[in-house]
Image (cartoon, rainbow, N blue to C red; front, side):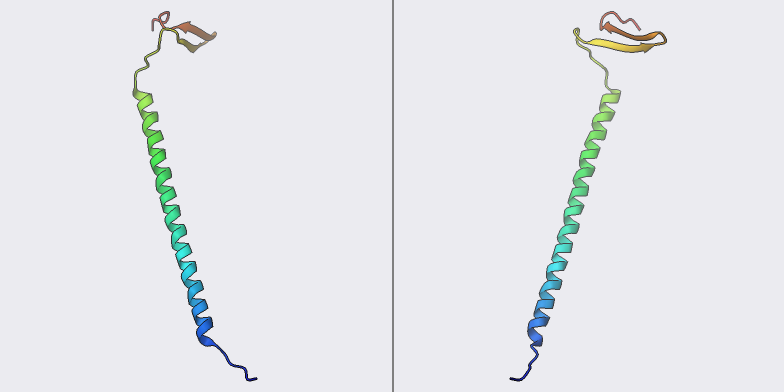
Length: 84
């Protein structure tokens, strides 16, 4: 039996592997880009909520207690009791 080399088959296999790896790499890059974009959107939403809470007026309900720190310790009082 004579030894013959089948170059077409190995070239096709090499091409298929390179193509599959390239598609896998492109898919991974796209997935990371979308994950980064989603994390950026969520971070901006949290930042917006924090800024809105920082500058909004507090509307305490009558049943809510207010605590503040004084030089002599913590003071807890009702909403109507504080006159500052």
